[in-house]
Image (tube, rainbow, N blue to C red; front, side):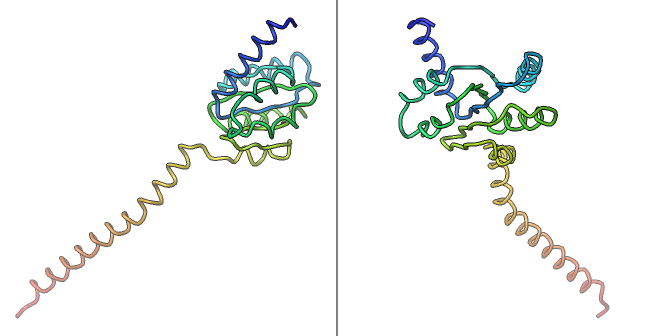
Amino acid sequence: MTREEKTSAIAELKEELGSTPFFYLTDSSTLSVAKINKLRRMCFEKGITMKVAKNTLIQKALENEPESKGYSALFSALAGPTTIMISDNPKAPAKLLEEFRKTEERPLLKAAYIDSSVFLGDDQLKALTQLKSKDEMIGEIIGLLQSPAKRLASQITATGTKIAGIVKTLEERPQ
């Protein structure tokens, strides 16, 4: 790889990884070409970008980013062959890995970067599949906030119904 090619690859990685809040670093080194193609097809179907890159290029692309992003915690995972999975959904790659590994033993999760949180190691895969998306969290919060209002509204209507029933009973009562 020439210097210009390396510079171009670093710039491309920096743009892709710096602009997404969710990406996974995996090891798919022992998979055959047919299995890699199957994995790529699954990634494409689920809207996940998959690419293989050299660890040194990944590290160079990430080390120039602001310290507040916390990319430095990922550097320990940059050893051996690395496949990057980029997605708009934080748990889509984890679900895909879990599904793919029902029949295969790889790819292994090296690390995941989710909104400035770093998950290191393959043992974190289960936790990543259970993450809630931003929309799911907002929906739950709205549901919790609406719950007291719904109860209050039902109490008010129930009280109104009770009062109407009492008034009707009193009207029908002989005097």
